[in-house]
Amino acid sequence: KERLGKPYEDKAGRVAEHHVLARRGGYMRGHVPVECAAALMAVDVQESTLKWVKCGIAKPNLDLYVSDYGEVLSYDDILLQAQDGVMQPDGQIIPVRSALIDEGYGNRTTEVRQFCMAQIMAGNGIFWPCKGRGGLQVKGNVTTSLKEVGSQQIMTYHFDDDGIKRSPYPHSL
Image 1 (cartoon, rainbow, N blue to C red):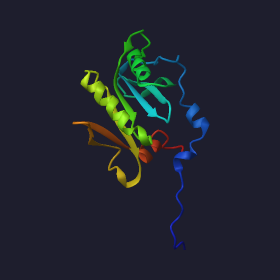
Image 2: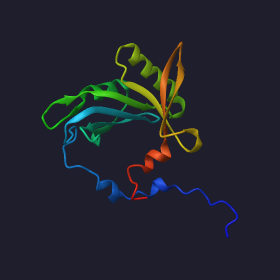
Image 3: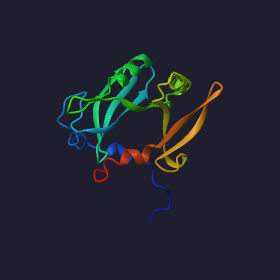
Image 4: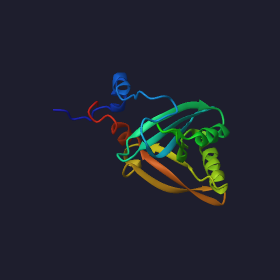
């Protein structure tokens, strides 16, 4: 009979490469294989770069298809990637309608919020700050809070990292 707690075990780290590769599609980079309801973008802020991914949300089942991904040095480059949108099989380009930018990289939180607020004020309100959190910090998969940016407030999205990392691979973990 165990009397002490067990050490933390990172279950998200158990996803094997073949599980990911089995989910890969056979379509060209920058495209999606189905008609999309919307195109989305996510940006992960690193110390000196910005990693991004663009996705299409399929009609009518809402499956998510990765269209393109990359790494850039500036927010101007992120704007260009968002403007490129996602190409459907019929050649129609779906513009990116919403983009989440991770504000969690240490000293770059204020910078992310300022960029997002500047885009909102310029009429390009598709960029929103977000932060992944785990455990008891987030009640539900997604929550929101208002954060100060100068004299303004911006909506920030908080995600349950643990829950979201498990959801694409329910039978693999």
